[in-house]
Length: 269
Image 1: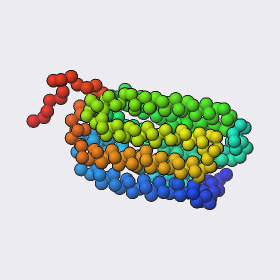
Image 2: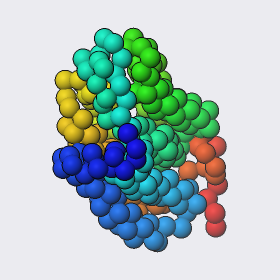
Image 3: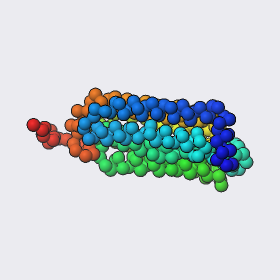
Image 4: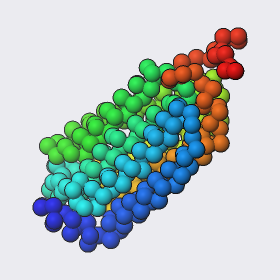
């Protein structure tokens, strides 16, 4: 199908089209809100967390506009073995581009909040990008139904690496940095909502086809609202009122190790 035909198909499906435009509107509103919330930040680390968080709705505006315009949407014929084998199914591959650019920003903000070290931060972000790219491969593979699921399990394996860092490594770093309470809240929100993405992929038209395209799109959009906008608001609201806690962390990325008594950074006069 040509791009105008894809665009017309999206326009004719009101539920699908609305799932895109609701997020475009919300992303625009929260971007203005986040700019206002971070206007008085002074500490460089706090500003970096704010910029990383601000990038999330900015990326979403671009991504959802691409989806709504038909630019990052294609109709792919499903392979033999798929529940819709032989049918052309609308594939929203632009969502994977969104996640590839936005989820690393979420992890960067969380890692900076926890005061983790570069090794753990690099591990989490690299595994996250690999998770998104292999998820895209699963959605775009039409040569073999089995290979679609093989890509899916590879993506889930990278996701397990991200979960390990979030659940096992960063909590200790956050406790040492004095941000464990807010980190715990944001970590739990992130883990619970991010688990929804592979579940809806498996149930949606790209996987078992239990859910149709419009319902799957709305599921992804609702997960995005919680995992991006609500997450970002909670984080920036805490940063705005607790900037001093962030400013007292060691310069650069944190060491992820609790300092021994008497070895902390001397206070400035």
